[in-house]
Length: 132
Image (tube, rainbow, N blue to C red; front, side, top):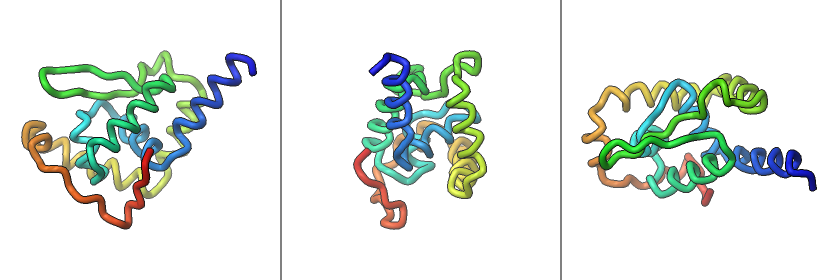
């Protein structure tokens, strides 16, 4: 398989899971700490970390460390492929993504130290989160 085709297949696999697609869409407006992502999506931080690992491997996200916190963001706009831009455009219209972004605004209004100090929460059954 040609390298370009293999890369595209890997990118498709990276976004072919609801949690990873939601995480990717959540980062479009700007960077978030890993704990802010977990709090916003109401999933365990370990699930978010695993999703981010796959998205980073596919070349969609980058990380920045600030003290004990890790902030994630999309790759710079000038490096984003047409595939990524199109995918984010499609995802932005999804009701679930819109709800996630509204919740993220509320979470971002809280101090990061407060968000990251919260104990891990049980995953609500309606989220249907499976191993990433």
